[in-house]
Image (cartoon, rainbow, N blue to C red; front, side, top):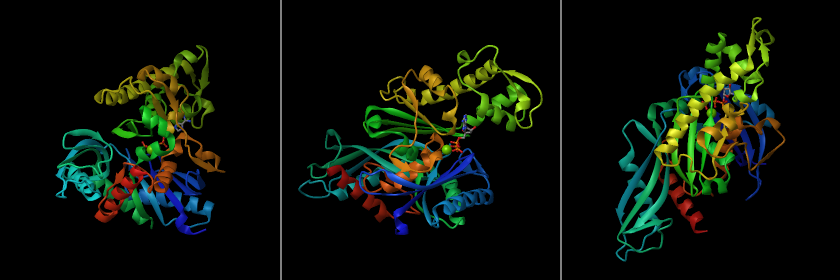
Length: 414
Ligand SMILES: Nc1ncnc2c1ncn2[C@@H]1O[C@H](COP(=O)(O)OP(=O)(O)OP(=O)(O)O)[C@@H](O)[C@H]1O
Ligand SMILES: [Mg+2]
């Protein structure tokens, strides 16, 4: 099997680094995941690198594990990027149609997409993705594919996703130092959406809420398009901190208590249910009410979900997404999460697990692996994906971006 047929996804999280290696089996076939590994993260805080050296050794350790598993060296990867510096904005581009007869060609579309990028980027930001949504030809709005139409003036509405150049460079530097080259940089939550959401959910309207250790990422889809993207500076680690404060324990003990005994709905916990802290590593003899524990968790979770709902309010979708909320990331595994989400968002909610893959590796059927697997799926779908164009000047030259635009159009025309 040629090495090129393997696709690697690298998810650099605040608490965990995860890698997945997959193989495309054929068109419309699930991707075969042949390797997956995770390792505790170091040198990363809120999705941004704080120590390149520490991050490099954590990433290298994860890669070594997966290489042992697959027996093949990992040479390049699709790398997920996150962090609260990520910003998304609407942008608008306008150009005059170049041909005298007014027929719109692919190069006009490329120019208008480029025009949309030019207006939006502050100097210290770099564009990660440009997502053209609809086009306007003269005064006709809502066109999905203007190629072949006739007009004088071509406009585009696009969603631009960008991140701070410094943060992006630190991430790429850390990855390069491990000896890996980068196929593309992809916003982690967009990659997670590849694996955790169905096409139908994206059409109907859905919000992916990825709860990591230090950040919570939100991506809203409607009519198949990305409507909004946000990375919030609050994650499941905050629940651990609250437990540590509430129970007056160390963070390490609080984390164990959270993983093994916490639930998010106090009403589901019996009044007399108790846990003994001495049952946990490093814990001293003390009886704790599980109901009290659930109250601590619930309070923080409600606050987190209200912050996410504010994002939905900002785009007028609060309580209005037919396919509801899909929770993913490590934080989504907490008992009772779905019930709290249903209550706060007033929408259907479920935990999203990876889809469109086959594998003998059990541990990847888990919400923590959606980003790493989604990156593999992103890589595999690069030729087929409609609408999303990666754009980091360091990796994809202008011609590469252009060819992606072209490919995107070919697929729209199919
Ligand atoms: N079974 C579980 N129950 C409750 N919480 C859990 C469970 N498993 C993991 N978590 C929590 O999930 C968090 C880690 O999630 P994840 O690994 O997705 O984060 P990350 O990708 O490293 O971080 P980020 O995306 O914020 O950079 C931790 O706070 C951990 O306590
Ligand atoms: Mg994450």
